[in-house]
Image (cartoon, rainbow over all chains, first blue to last red; front, side):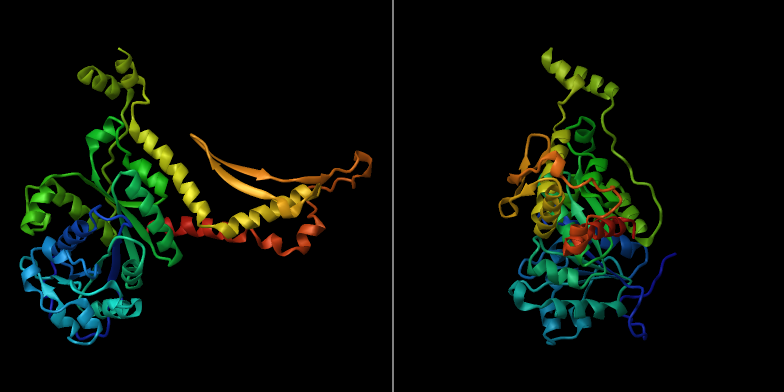
Length: 279
Length: 127
C-alpha cells in the first residue's frame, strides 16, 4: 500500500487530525536517539507515510548529519519560530525518500532561543505536511526536553541495557507521565550473547524495572556506525539485519501486532555449555 | 574448578546484579521525588501509634536506609507514656474508623499515591 503523495504537495485541508507527533527521548545522551529517529523515520517513509523529523537539539544539531542532509540546510526551526521564514522553506526534503523531510535545529543559537509555546506551534504546523512527526529530543530533562515534549502527543523512550541509561529513562518516564502521554520503550544496542551469558540485563528485565510497554529491541550492530558515517539510513541496505527491525517498529507504530524477538535468559544447559567452552 | 562451578551455578551474571541495584536505586529516586507522600505517611503512622501509646509528635523521624539487597524504612517514634492496661480505652472494632482520623484532613494523605499508581499503570499500557 504505497502512498505516493509527494511531500510538499500540501493538501488543502486545515490540519491533519491523525498526524502522530512523537517525541524520541532518553534522558541520557549517546543511547541512540538520533540514530533511532533517523532510521525509524526512513522506515516509516519507505512504508509510504509522509514523515517530518524534527531536530530539537538547538545548538547541537546532528540529525541532518546522520541523514546526510547537512549541506542543504538553509533555514532552521528557530527562524521558523521567529517568523523569518515559512515553515515549508525550512523543511529539507530527503534525497532518497520522496516523503521524508527534516526540520533542522539552529546550530549557533542557545536552547532558550525558542520557547515551549513556540516549539509546540511549529510542530502543530507540520500536521499539514506529515502523517508522522518524530521529534529528536536533546539529552537531559531541562529546557530542550521540555520544548520537545511540548510539541508531542506521545513518546518513544530509547534506552540501552545499562544501569545509567535505565535510571535516566526512568526519570524521563516519570516526567512524561506527568504530562501525561502514552509511552513506548525502545531498547537499543542489546547484545544478545551477553544477555544469554547473564552479563547484560535482558529485555524482560529492562521492561520490568521501567514498568513500560516495549515497542522494539535493536541489537548492537557495527554496521550502524558504517551507515551513519556515510549519512545513509540503514533501511536502504537490503542486506542489513537491522533494516527489518526498524521496519517492524514502524509497523508496530502503525498499530500492527508483531511479536518482539525475545533474548532469553540462560538456561542451566546453556550455562553448562558456556562453562565448558570457556572454562 | 571453582570458576567452573561459579559459572555453572551463578551468580556469575552481572546482569542480575544490575537489575537488583537498579530496582533499589529507582525506589530511592521515586521516594526522593515524593516528599509530600512521605510526610503524609509519617502523619498517618503517628496517628495509628498514638491510639495505643502517647507519642512525642514533634520528634518523630522517618528515614529510608539502603542495605545490600533491600530498602528499609526506619521510624524513630519517641514514646512519652504508656497507660496501664486497665486504663486503656476498650478496643475499637477494626471496621469502625477512629474519630481522630476521620476528623483530620490527614485521611486525604494517601490519595495522591493511589492515584499516581493507577495512572502509572494506565499510562504505560499500550497506546
